[in-house]
Image (cartoon, rainbow, N blue to C red; front, side):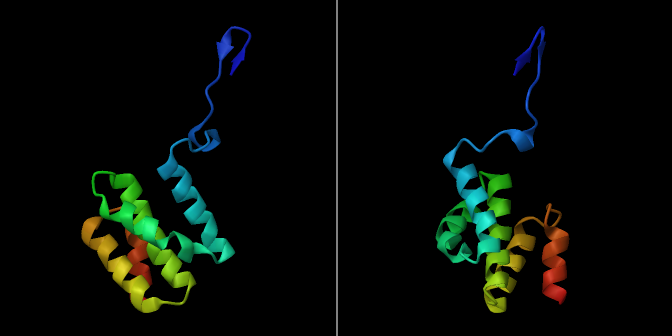
Length: 103
């Protein structure tokens, strides 16, 4: 955005997701509150399995775990949290995963 001689760039939070994977991840995350996350599980698995997209695969794995938690499928959420910790033991969501496994 240009105002006079000064150009302002939007923050990352203000920039809408423009590629399909980012849009998919945002929709999957929002679906947790709506109770419709099961529709996204297959796509999340594909993203979680692709280690070349580390940030996205990390988020996809934790979203799968959260979805199973929300659906009261603790057996499956534990598997996802363990998979998460195997791949990202010091990841952004590692504390959440460890806490979920000890509850």
